[in-house]
Image (cartoon, rainbow, N blue to C red; front, side, top):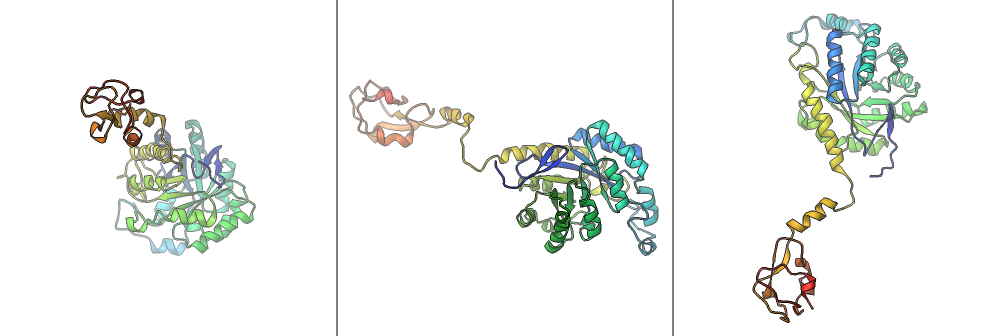
Length: 354
């Protein structure tokens, strides 16, 4: 299948229409600040077939203002929040040392390490760790100074579009392009956890691709595997899915994340979907052509007929197998004389006709 759009290369892997979907296991903060859990998540994502694991690079100073901390000192949902916002951010922040350790473990498992920077210092750290791409979170699509800083590093830039208007998306895309960086992938996204199905609007992917001429994927917050697989069927070249070992673990995003079995389903069934989409040109494969012999019908005699008999419609029926004269060729058989005697229910071939 041919496409005018140039794919984006990530570690030598082509990402774009017509290629197998690039699957990112979004660990985010699901490591819960525990590096043993972090390593197990990386191992499981690699075993499930994902091409990359993605973290979130922020600290207690780079993301949240003091007044926001002051407003969020207590939560009733103790499963998602073990303490105040400050306590959770402090516990879940990914330190530079943890970045280095996670990147090394990813390398040992043959899976790409990447992350979302929330400040320029974090983008620099990720560059030092040689990430294959930078991810811009939905919340930062209007943080154009950060978008510009990341774009200047001349690596692929993946931009989530949750909460954004087309005009806001356009400004972000043009900011990247203004730095001479054309390596852009947009991810359609709905920033609800989880979103209602009638808010997902997967057809927006086609809108984004047509509007901006770049590969488009889907950053998924729905439950289960149906919607990301539907996105792949509609042409998503990349799927980003939150990932956990167990959905009942304590923490922010475990409940809406895919478990290892679900991630494996997205990877394997996604590949099958792209393969099955195939070409738009109508073709009949060799296996189907061979199947015609067994499943299609041929003209057969309705009764015993003598050599020299002139065939009429009353002399013929159509039955399996499809090894003789086709039913749609009956006009070329009628009025012809038989070259040999025929028994009842015998498959008619051209050699039987004078």
